[in-house]
Length: 240
Image (cartoon, rainbow, N blue to C red; front, side, top):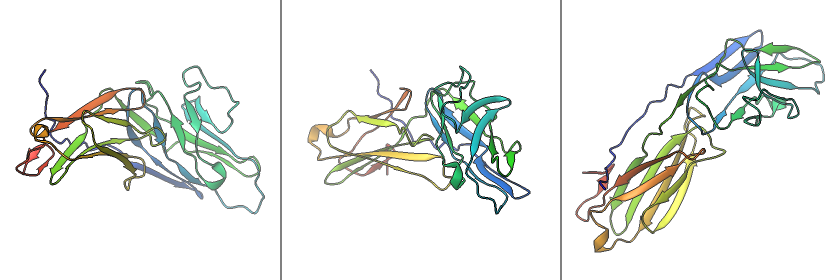
């Protein structure tokens, strides 16, 4: 079986931020997010409401697609069969957090979605000009791979995703110390997770592929590989 050496692939995700303000109402949400089919997505959302001297003790939050309710702050509120048990509000409305999560993403889950907040003792608002659209793709891109050879071999395997609550899992075809770290870049909804494999090489380890397999939430997988050379450092699978 032929093993392919993946070269680095840089994917620029078409995600823009939607920031709306109207009569002291404001909201900050991503306008477009790429999501892997079958996986999950955490949609961040922050909102503000007009100031009031009233004491507020009731907060109602809803995410909708047109007139269809897709998530709400009332767990007992029944959703349609399409979204039943697949969504939940993850933010704390009282602190201005209107984030929500969608699991088992389908090709039909494109939206657009909008947020509605109801403060029965004050005011209500639907942010219809600040829609969120999901661009659902079916095949995950291969991970970005690096390898460095000194006294030890250090290989890294990196992917991006939009579901920090259920990050991808990594497996390697070689023994060694393994460490996984995630970080959130500046855009606040695209996460980067990296698995690092470190081991002391034997002669038989050189010029053989080190393969990283990534499994996303929903069980879709992707693979990448690098080949360590004992003569020089390699990066992204290419001698430098």
